[in-house]
Length: 212
Image 1 (cartoon, one colour):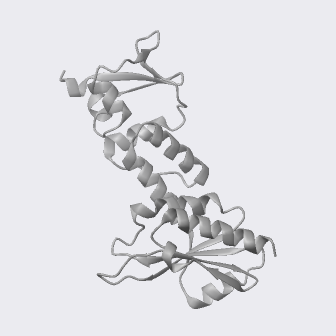
Image 2 (cartoon, one colour; image 1 turned 90 degrees about the horizontal axis):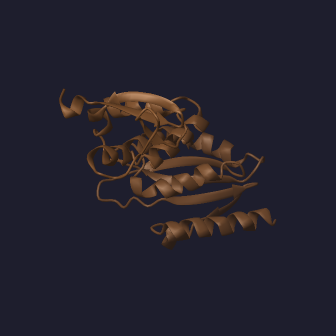
Image 3 (cartoon, one colour; image 1 turned 180 degrees about the vertical axis):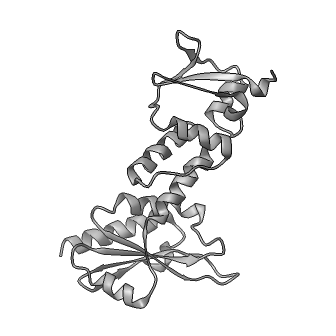
């Protein structure tokens, strides 16, 4: 049996999984390092490599490593759990897949009529994040922190994304507009390329609206 076809037993939080060494070394990450280096590992009484993590999503993780893709569950909570495990195992491609799937669940404004209905919602302040409609038809990796901020603040804001036409050679600045009872606060232009200023000016504006 070649080394790539070697069967490896992993004890993940008390549940034993069997897979091939080639599967575990297909993607860069913690498991590949464990297989290809002399890094010390803990083994259980049967000789399986022990990793003190929940086994709940490990079969899905193995399927991703086998095929390079996997169908994620519909549950936002479970996707977050899987992304946390992907981060632990340093499986960046799986973590990115989780993030992209999660972002698809964000609400997008697609027409002016929809925009008008959205900003008139009195239930809580409305945050609209404006972003370029880029050639990849997706979100740039450099803006993932902005997206994470949006996901973390869904409980106190109605958050929407609105794209504008991207033109080749044009900058791809993001911006925000904050509405409450049709009052509008907009992000200062000079903060568009600085994530810390993007967030700090937004947080200050949210506080300003809340104090009214």
